[in-house]
Image 1 (spheres, one colour):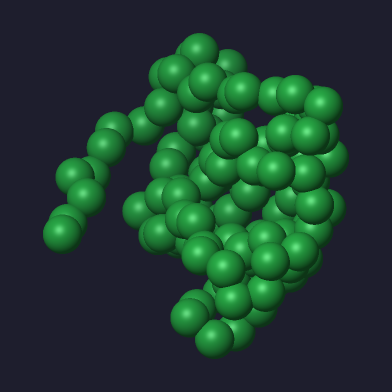
Image 2 (tube, rainbow, N blue to C red; image 1 turned 45 degrees about the vertical axis):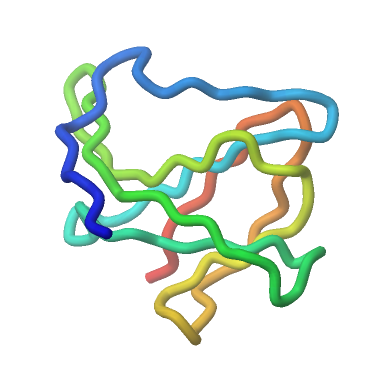
Length: 105
């Protein structure tokens, strides 16, 4: 099954559901990852299902950044995957917050 490509996000187009045990992650990436699907997995559930998000341009006043957004994540530690078998980074997602991190060089 192929997911349709989407245009750049406009202001107010991403909904974040946050709660005491639910947070979100914004992963900022270089422009060359535009359109890439980046997977993450919850380290509290080894072998559990991964989730993914597409890197998209995010237009801001005077600049464009590139990011994948993961809303509605249970609080915990996550692995960001470079490819199917190679971890790129780990990040702690806190409940009630939007956590941000940068794609490692």
